[in-house]
Image 1 (cartoon, rainbow over the protein chains, first blue to last red):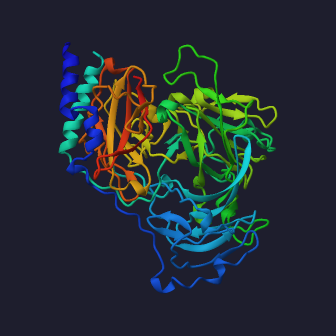
Image 2: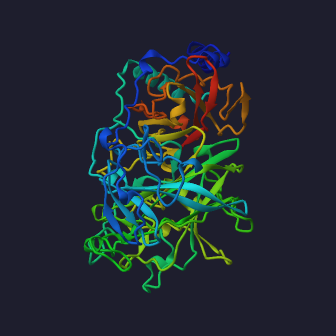
Image 3: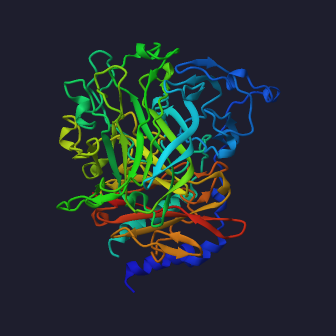
Length: 170
Length: 427
């Protein structure tokens, strides 16, 4: 056996003793059990849970913006970590609302401060950090076939533009 | 096998030192799995708009109408298209697409004062923008190049076939005054999974028409993200249907004085339902002074071409899945090969996409920088990178591949794999 081949074989044996073994044991090393901390999204107190402001359900004309403070809800637009926003644009929870995607380098978007209607009439939740969340029915064409799905939209400034540079190297 | 020696020794050293290191949990994360971006490295743009003083969009990286003297702007229906090389995100089984993303911003001619104005049709302040129509196309091989680039000759969209997917709805949010002069990343997620069976994918974003860099309240697809040597092979524009004449991005149009390998392109990405890897490296990050040493991972194609032959480097892989897999083990599988492995290997009900017979496959087991438990939010994000010294000239031309197996630590059962991702040691 050539030296390099022998070294590789030895290392492979030391590291794993066979491909099938790791697959069925699957135990990570103790030192790896560091958990990413849960994201936190500010929520109204429990007292407000049952009190929906009328603005949540009111239809406003395109271009409008109304200040709002939302109660905690148990379902709707998933922000992650068990936090939801009420659905918008007539979307029903039972139709399935996908979670938002947000750059993990950003802090959570914070509480909703306003409801805004864009120039096409689509409703958006405006967060305290200026980011926006919405859900709506949307048209897709899949391999030539049209269908309607539920989609969630979320917009936020890039992490690099949140004044977080420079920072410690990973 | 000889050429593996330096890399093997260096990785072994890195594994040993990493095992002695202390892991530091990352700050709180929100759920953001399955994303791959087309680019993430900023160019330094020194030219500014004469009125607003905002850094100009980089010339040559938007459709021609965007920067011409005439302000008629980009023709409606123009596409910006991008090929994402599959070795960077290889999945040798069907993909299930669950969303897309794109960065957009008002043009640099839009002054800050406009953000706090109430424009026509509005009753509140803010600048209207739109999230372009997104499509995935069947790939069509481009003309072979000599010499052949590391990631191949590239692909372009095949407009003779129906798009594999088009998200037809165009959303038009208002940019908040607090977000003025920032590039906003818009993510769109679906409540359905779109099956894509092609190994290569070409994406496009559709312009509404009339966009121009010098037109207030117009918008752009922000550039300023580099994709290193891939750029000439993988993106450009297409005229409105039915013509769809393709223009390829021309690096010669990049700013004078910029490094020719530091191209830019629109920043976009997509989401997958399956667990994924996001590869990041220091060479893939911006090397502009403001970004060197930053915490921001470069989930980008720029990481696909390493210069580890001549310099030390740091690299790592983040894994994203969903919270249902919290507590499961993200088990790293390593390959070093002269070409990326291109076979799917069925194994205990899962599909492996790297070579299971590679002797290095277990090299990173137990390395806390690559092996650990998935968080409650569905991510495994090691807090530091694996650092290796310069690997020497014998490493040039090698490919390093990586994949995670997902293993239930209670039952020992394999429950999934990510796709594989490969980087090439170029110099």
